[in-house]
Image 1 (cartoon, chains in turn orange, cyan):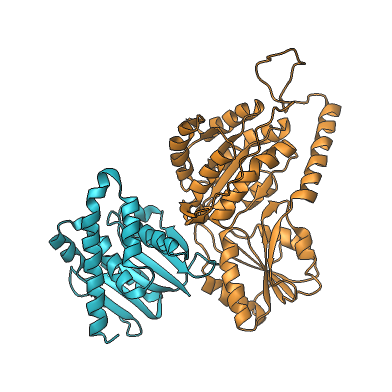
Image 2 (image 1 turned 180 degrees about the vertical axis):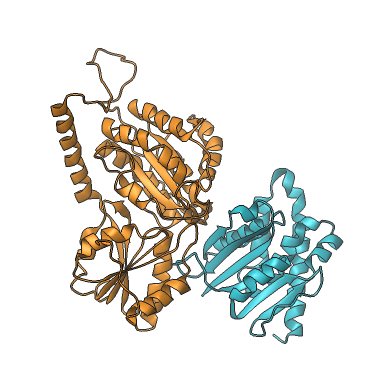
Length: 360
Length: 186
């Protein structure tokens, strides 16, 4: 197979086509607009539907509609747009509709900046809309991984009848890298037993709704959802580790920052510093076990993010009070440089940094 | 080996395209590459840049604190990125608009009268190709032949007629790099 040079945003788009997605609804926003640009051209070629909606609110509700008929549908946006979509996402989780959502994060809160950020981590992993729901959330770090995850995202969404979120930052959305689109054909879209549409033969009526007005019914529904989220927790958690077995300090980062940290860890190892790295591939479910496993051997954990400290809360939850957790963050659209992370690591090793503590 | 390159200049000078051609060529040579554009307000008028990393191995960080090469197509770019070129690195800058001062003697600085050469060739639009030629002629990041084949693949249909002009600009840049190397005794 040949490898082609492609932008992260375009990799989402092409992978969606190859995964059998034929319904795209979106609204332009930097830094994800290339997804729309690409699909506006590509969808008609494969007989699919591309709609530039009048707003993000409209786009997510169009996704709801298409998903209710069992069609593989998608929307992509960036931070402020993702906030606008929260109502629709909550409704989809409640109505148990599968779809794939992409948030190419930029600086916030509010309009913020158009530069790369990771400050929607809590919104993504702890629920941005109302009600008790979770989204299986992937945080790819390379353009190849963006393509691979998108290819399998609908299979996961349909398996659990829940939206799947792919969370990246503007940096990898805009970056070009070589990608090989693996030639596995998409799983054939199945006739869902729950999907609504025109009844061709006599069958019982089907209903898609997130409304459960009877409290007992609503509680039953929530328990059903909880059982499903527990299955996702157990079966879908994914992460990558580098040199963690004997690491005295374990770095933790996701997305592009994990790659910056990887370079820092490789350099530290050459200098004789026992550093390691844990990179969550799913940020929900979060790989708590991966951290817990290193508590006995690691003297410290060091979280790096493009925000003021969000994933660090999950690392603190995993590590407990058994080891100090340090944090370094840049935000507002600034990407941490390898040199500054390396120098912060030196300061931590020299004992010159106060650990991060959010459990005040 | 891993090399980081920043291509920088005014928006509209073909800064991003020069970086893409370099990345495509290196990929064709079998290297690992990353290409990262500036997509902020600066590209909406004003200065523009992209970072290309070329490596024999998987690239860990696409973010570079230091770079091996800088192509500066204007003075602000030279001043902005000159300081992050690592010791022993190389800068090629467009010298058409006069002498440029950068207070560093630990790097190789090559003056390329790119705008002037481009005008002589017949189009101010090929300044980026002259600069790319200078980089290719001295860095070993890719070869002239690979770049020419990438250009031929990218410029098709209506645009195919621009290929000879771009090759001419590329060759002029390569020649400048050759002369510069001779002069500085490399």
